Structures are given as structure tokens and as C-alpha cells.
Image 1: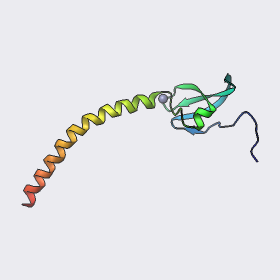
Image 2: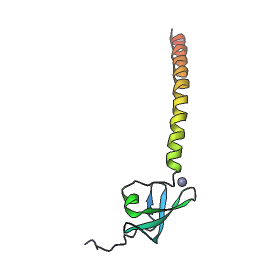
Image 3: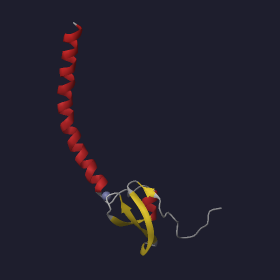
Image 4: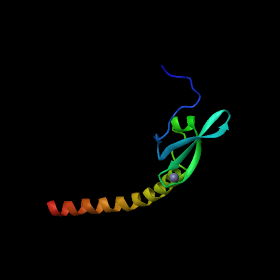
Amino acid sequence: MTSKCCVKDITGQTFGRLTALYPTKERHNEKIMWRCRCIEGNEIEVATADLIKGHTQSCGCLQRELVAQRVHRHGEAIHGNETSLYIVACEQRLSG
Ligand SMILES: [Zn+2]
């Protein structure tokens, strides 16, 4: 039996990096905005649906990190190839 109450209680639930704290009195298109705290301590307000559907999983830091990671990985890939080639050359020497 699911109640059709308009306030879905997600207090304390985590969605990605966000933890739902409490529902605010804000309404965006009749959607309840939840006060959420990110793991960094930033607090933002997110609509319930956006949390449940996974549209919003951080205060924005997650996306920032993904972009940073992509740049980092790109740099590593070039370096990584050189390293593995070097290791292969070494192993061939040792076994031969
Ligand atoms: Zn954050």
C-alpha cells in the first residue's frame, strides 16, 4: 500500500554524494525541494524527482571532478603507454 502523500520522506537517504536533510517549503512546479548536503559540506536544494532519478547527485563537484579526471587520464594514457612498452622490452631481455 503506497500512500499518495505528496511528501515522499527521503530524510537521511543518500543519492550519489547528497544526503537528504529535510524538505523545504520551496516548490518548483509543485515539486518539493529538499535540502541536501554534499559530502563536501555544501548544501543545495534539489527536487525530489531529480534525486530519485539520479539527475542530481552532487552540489556540482562530481561533474567538476569528472572533467578533471578526464584531463588527468588523458595525460596518464600517453605516459602509461611508454611505461608498458618499456616493461615489455625489459621482460624480453630478461627471458631471452
Ligand atoms: Zn559537492
